[in-house]
Amino acid sequence: MTREVRQILDMNAFDPGRAGQSDAVARRLSNLGAASVLFYREPIQMVSASGAWMTAADGTRYLDFYNNVPSVGHSHPRVAAAVADQIAVLNTNMRYLVAVVDDYLQALKAKLPTDLENIVLTCSGSEANDLAMRVARRATGGTGFVVTQTAYHGNTALATDASPSAFRTGDVPDFVVAIPAPGAAQYGDDIAGGFAAAVRGAIATLADRGLKPAALLVDSIFSSDGIFADPPGFLAPAVQAMQDAGGLFIADEVQPGFARTGDAFWGFARHGVAPDIVTMGKPMGNGFPMAGMAARPGDLAAFCENVGYFNTFGGNPVAAAAGLAVLQVIEDEGLQDNARDVGAHLLAGLRQIADRAPQVADIRGAGLFIGIDLGLPDAPDSPDPAETVRVIDAMRDRGILIGAAGRYGATLKVRPPLCLTRDEADLFLTAFAEATGA
Image (cartoon, rainbow, N blue to C red; front, side, top):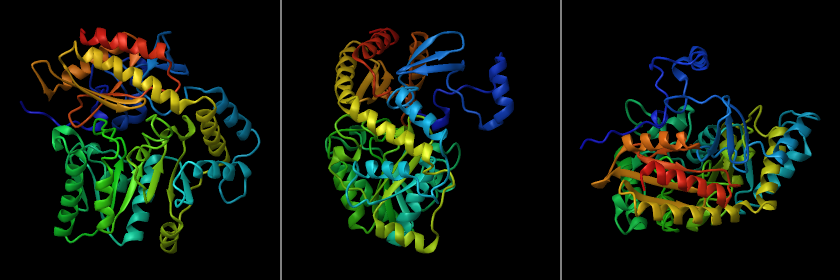
């Protein structure tokens, strides 16, 4: 059976060539043209959201298991109040001293490894990863990067070059080597050893091309690859292999960071590794656009000798107020513990369903970040993207929003807000059982 590699924007996406478009869809397509990306074959017009729920224009309420940006809950009142209060008083750039900005930076640094003393704030994870790659090149003198086969690290020119899943045609450039994601299907029982060997092989490939490595750049839960979380610690030998070769480890925490994995505040922390650079974004401001890169002072100083960095909107006081509120809510509402506990409840329920649903090939994850592989019932190791689309639509019909990931688009990506309750998790489990015929 031929398996087609899926591009990230094609997963669970509306076909703009489809007939019978609504007025709202036609309006969007006329405004954005070929760059328009809409979820579902029948796009949803949303009007409001709260907690783990979103409400459509027709009044339908949906339990959101798709969107990991409003991590502490849609429209969280404390984040909304922090944004409103700050923008009513002052919003400007980082060339002025504004206390809330440094309050936020110090609160964020308290969550990071102590040697990463400098944080550069940006507006998007793409900007953060682009900057991290440039800093890594300057710090090491290398130019090459090792990523995973279905990675997504952003949409600037440089970050896209390191994002194999973004390519509809062609492949990554010669300074990037993509290796298989750290799963048992590729590496068997020795995921740690196999993945480290793949990194060493990629370094050798770069050397054959006359290139020195700058960094291993991975999303520490490998979300676009299909979510690979276990066993904890498997990432450490691969990181060591890159550092031994003179490169850095860039931990892309744009998706797994900020308490989502439950076991730890950062995805990399589950593996007991010390990143040279950490990038972050999406959940930082609970929907307010903000992101950042944390680095050692010496590495950032070396980069700034050549170019320097300034971002007009990065680190503005309103973003800092939103980010500080997010950190406080995670702590005050115990959301890391909730992610661990409700995530464990979800995993247990999903595994019970898998026993009755032959198309459920594998379930992986940590906290409230779970991947569900769907395969052919008589050959579960063969990915079935068509079944994945059918299940996604069946879940939507039952009021649940969920997306796809993985090399073949056959992995359901489960990432609800961290405030998800056990009752809401049970609603998901019931819908998933019905959608899979379990």
